[in-house]
Image (cartoon, rainbow, N blue to C red; front, side, top):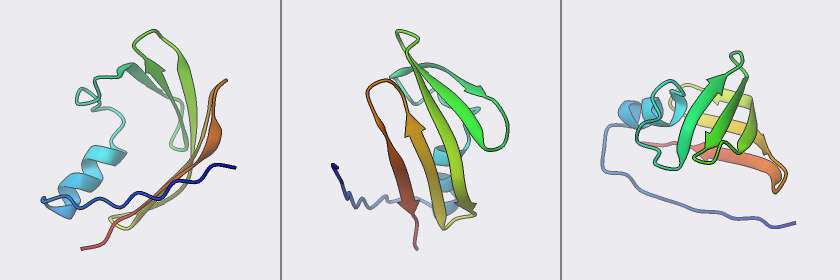
Length: 86
């Protein structure tokens, strides 16, 4: 199993950052995507520029604190976890 732990500091308002990473209706800033299809409040599909789908299941979403989801396509299967702190 491969595990990665990346820590990043952003010089912006935490609410602004939260809204950017959790609002799947606004993805224009993502140059790697052609679209995001929202299935329901827990599931969405990201499509790469070549229409290659990646499936997401949100497992935890605690406002301004934590965002977790499972991710899967034919090349990868895993979890993505974000913890935010002021």
